[in-house]
Image 1 (cartoon, rainbow, N blue to C red):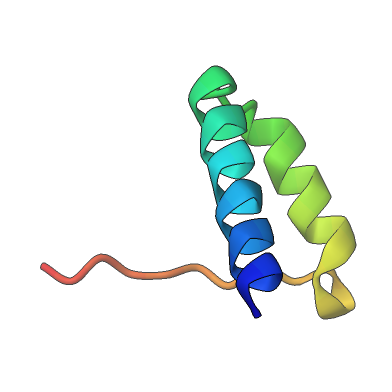
Image 2: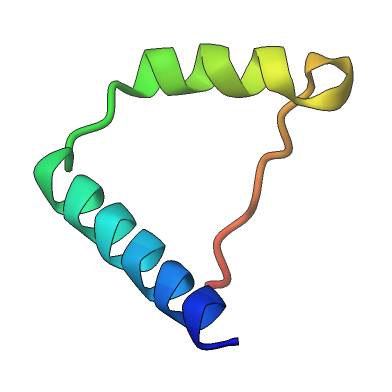
Amino acid sequence: MFGRGKMLYNTRQSSLSWADENRTVNASELYELLKACLPNGELIHLKSAT
């Protein structure tokens, strides 16, 4: 049990470190990636709660 918790902690730390180093996102590449991965290639448009 201890080993599993330690592994999750290390994975989270690695993810946070990677996220800090790669802050910018190319919107058009992200759009194409999501379109390719989502069922039927459809994106859901969310409305802001105003």
